Image (cartoon, rainbow, N blue to C red; front, side, top):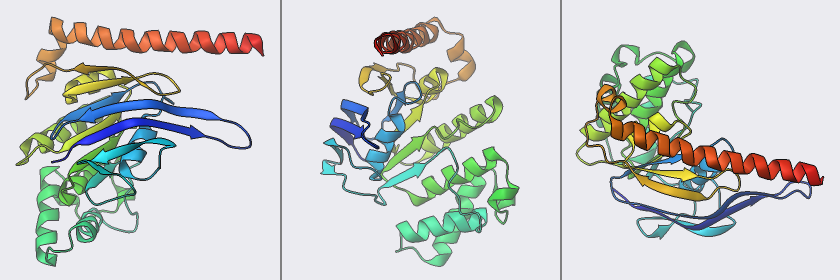
Length: 271
């Protein structure tokens, strides 16, 4: 397991003389084995934060730490799942997972790698599709392979950037439950930073939810999710506590969006 510590993260983009503040003074600490969701509207910098923790981008100011060590680039201690699946199209599902394990855990023998790959393909219900190429699989199946690959790599930290955003509602629910099953079924809970713009998804999955403001992205509020695990989707949705918390989250997001609309309206009026 691992801790994530974001300290005073800011990020500014500039092209052809323009200046866009994507993130401003973001502070967030994530404990060992904790599942934290970043919740906010499109364009608020959620994906930029994931990229910074992954080591794919360097913040303009501030530092991201993994286990008190500053992030200076990508590393095998972090597994990433993007919305677009990120599978090698010329490799089968089996080969994609084997390749990832081999290049992150070189001490394992080929037999151990293949056995681990088959175990995770079976866990996600795709053992029969081990020799299928990504273009022959549905979107949900490709995302299951991506998640199985991340678990099979066994990193300290899971970074997930709207991994279910492109799926239909039924597949989305199935994938959420699959993720929780794999995450809770391991010997140790991995530390998870999960990006979403879906309130129900955040409440179903998370220990805490960090609500972000519209651009420039800041942490508006961090909310504890009090529901015990395992969580029953039907029971939660019908509880007063769940609906009160959901209403609060929606209210925070809605107020921020109204403030942003008002700012944009004033700006255009002055232009």
